[in-house]
Length: 334
Ligand SMILES: Nc1nc2c(ncn2[C@@H]2O[C@H](COP(=O)(O)OP(=O)(O)O)[C@@H](O)[C@H]2O)c(=O)[nH]1
Ligand SMILES: [Mg+2]
Ligand SMILES: [Zn+2]
Image (cartoon, rainbow, N blue to C red; front, side):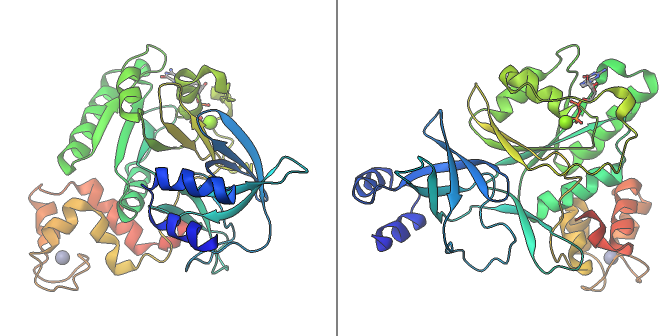
């Protein structure tokens, strides 16, 4: 029986075979949509949610994590006849996952979410202002995890001339590097349909500073969610540490969106200082022409990156993000 499920874990396409085998071992397959540490809500089929827990030790390969099961995980579970709860017996191979260190001292990390198709980074020019460095910290993490990212610039209804100029600047800056941006206003309804089209049939992660409009967007996409949104006056209440668990919301038009409230950013565990530039696409591209192949693009002679900043090929703000991230303790953004 175990051999069968092991086999299945390696072959995601064996649906017919799986159905056949599951009839024998009575194991069902589902997707974890919420994890609260010890209990898991697992979506079975399109609309059955089963409360699950773990019994004993799960067979998890190589990872040292504080949580064995995360949102987005595909799992096999068994039904406990007495309680009606599900018992997760196996986590199927993850296509990808994002991590954060569970604490600065700990060698263990926490899986925030797994099996993500794409990320949406929501930013705003005002109320609040999203700094370019914040965007870049997110993008390099996503790049390292190979998760395609779309930048949503929200609250365009509030923008005057200078904000619109800033918006155009960001759009062109990130557009040149190959990131898609969507200019959005939830209040006037602009481009919401475009976001929906992008999300359709996929597992998306949504991230961004507090107050940019993430919950508001999810409420529009799926009114049944009825998520709590923030009042403008609450913006500066930074540092309030609400411990919430990431949650995966099902979208009525098909697809899922993972919301990570309370998680200010995710980082790449153990990203080396000398590989950070690999995840700045345009810097990496140009770095091939540096004189030294271990060039960090700081003050080395014949650095092609610095030359490209000089002649405008690389945006100075991106280079500054790179310097700040490289020079600072890069653990900060974990
Ligand atoms: N003017 C304007 N306000 C918005 C827009 N989208 C969201 N908001 C407001 O921004 C505030 C924060 O939104 P919320 O969804 O809680 O942000 P979150 O912290 O990212 O989840 C709320 O008061 C929303 O009503 C928009 O497109 N235009
Ligand atoms: Mg919110
Ligand atoms: Zn260089």
